[in-house]
Every structure is written in C-alpha cells, then in structure tokens.
Amino acid sequence: MVRLITHNILACHVKGCTSNNFPLQLQGVQIELREAEFNPEFLKTFLPKIEWKALVDTAKEARDTSLPLEQPEMLDDEFLKNLHHVLLEIHIEEGTMICPNCKHNYPISNGIPNMLLAEHEVG
Amino acid sequence: MAPPSVTSATISKEPGVYEDEFVHDIYERIAPHFSSTRYKPWPVIASFLSNLPAGRVWTIGLDKSLNLLKIAKNAGGVSREVVRANVLDQPWREGAFDYAISIATIHHLATHERRKQAVKRLLQSVSPNHGRVLIYVWAVEQDDLSKREIPVDELQPGGKDVFVPWVLPDPNADKTQVFNRYYHMFAKGELTQLVSEASEEMGLQVGTKNSDAQTGIELKQDGWERSNYYVELHRWSI
Image (tube, rainbow over all chains, first blue to last red; front, side, top):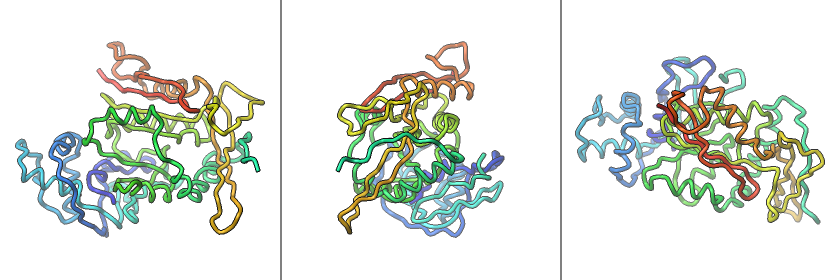
C-alpha cells in the first residue's frame, strides 16, 4: 500500500535525471480506501515536510480534489480531515509511477513500489 | 551434527553480481524462516527508537528482497509502508527524513566503496539540519553467547569477508538446506572510519557543531553490542 504520504517523497533516480524528476505521476492505478485513525497532531507535524503542490497534483491523479492549491494558514478540522484522507487513507495497490522528466516507469504491485533500476540506469 | 561454521570468503565476481548470488537470492529464499527468527530489536536500537516522538513518526521500510518486504508490510499485525530499492540508490527527495536506521545491511556489500556509498545514501536521506542516523553492522569480535566461531587465521585491520551459513529446515523431509550468505565483518574502528570517509567526501565536517564549517556531522555514540558495531550520527548546519 503506497499511501500518498509515502509517494510524496519518492523521486526518480535514473542516472542524469536530476531535475523535474518529482513527483512521479500515477498511471493506471488501482486504489483502495481504508479508514485510518485521525491524528491532528501527527498531521500538523508533517505539514512542513510535505511538498504541497506535488501532493495536490497527485491527489487529483487519484481522483481526490479536496485539497486547496495553497496550504491554508488556518488549520481547521475540515482541512485536517481532508488532508488526513489524502495522506493516509488512499492506498495505491497496483499501477505505475512515471517520471515527469525521463518517463521512467516504476511499477507498484501488491502495494509495493519497485524503485530498483537496472545496472546501466543507476546514477 | 554440529552446525555448519563460518568460513572465509573471496569475492570472485563483480561485486553486484556477487551480492546477487550470495546475499539477495538467498534472502529471497529464506525470507519467511529468517523473519520468524527476528523477534526483538537490540538494546541500542530499541533505545534509539524509544526516543523518537511517539505517535508522530511515519516509518518506511526499504529492502531489495520482495519476499522480506511482503512480510514486513504486515508483520506483527501492523500495516506499514515498504519500498523496494537498493541501499546504494537514492529513490527519494534528499533530506526528506528526520531519522534513518540501517540495521545489519551494510555488511552485505562486497567492497569498501560500496559500503561507503550506502553510508552516503543514509546521510543524504536525512535532514542536513537535524537528521539522525543509526548504523549497525556485524563485528569480527563476536559475543561469547553467539554460536558462531569466526576463523581468526587472517584477521586484518580492514575487517573480514566471510560466509555465514543459514540453515533452512525442510518441512517435507528430515533434512536441511544450507545457504552461505556473504558478510563483511567489521574490524574495530572500521565503521567510524567508513563514516568519516563518507562524510568528508560529502563535504561534511566530522565533529560537533562549530562556526568553521557550514555543515557537518557529529558522532553521537559508537560502540560494540552483541557482536555488532554501531554508530549514531547527527547532521548539523549553521
């Protein structure tokens, strides 16, 4: 289960692919929604670590448009609940993540993303 | 019958190919049995983990073995995130993590350069301002309680390359299968030396935070515990 909180740190690492290599785009994904315990303190701790635009764009690819384009200053319950859902309840089980720059495909199978590269692709 | 013993190893192939044969392929095959023998962390690791802010840590496991990852994903009835990748690579945003732990992994890499590369990847994965890294590797000096006898015929300051057997019971027959896993057993001082080299090559000053350098790394603790060497590193920046 790749959740979007994890996806938000994955980046392409093919040799020479060092710019515009994040976020990896979702394609042909199977998604499962699973309820998780709501923990506002956890979310507030994580907010500064998140690449916001990447999260909003990726959520859209996973058919969720509940997040605002800019991080709000006021962290009200409605926002935190939407953030909670996007980060922790959307599980990508199958599909592909594609580098926006070099188009390398990283498959996800049984909820496990495969970031391994062939020897000649390693930087 | 006495258990098979640890024997000297010679890296006879290109290191990546060698590791595939004597590390990765073996762990894929022994994964369930190996996992069933892991039941609790060593004290230094338990202490490191208990000092993290409870309930506010997101954990991601990395391994190359798909079979181990499938187990790790749900081990202990807890659902957690895992990523299949190589410890020599950097599959994430630099500095994205606050903490990184590498337990009993780097000693499976077959050259000094590759082990150094793995240390660099750990240092790159954590925050340059406050990232903390804990590394644990096997020591040449083994615990008296350990069942292993290490051949001491050619002890070198640079550690020792050995095969450590894994005995896999065969449930369908009254016999066992033995897999020889490659290990580089670290000599005293070798892990801290490796970390220093990796840090210097990354432009990180080794020592406590000071105004002579922009960024560096402090050796918070190092030592020997239960047949392993460990080191805890804290990154800092001005």
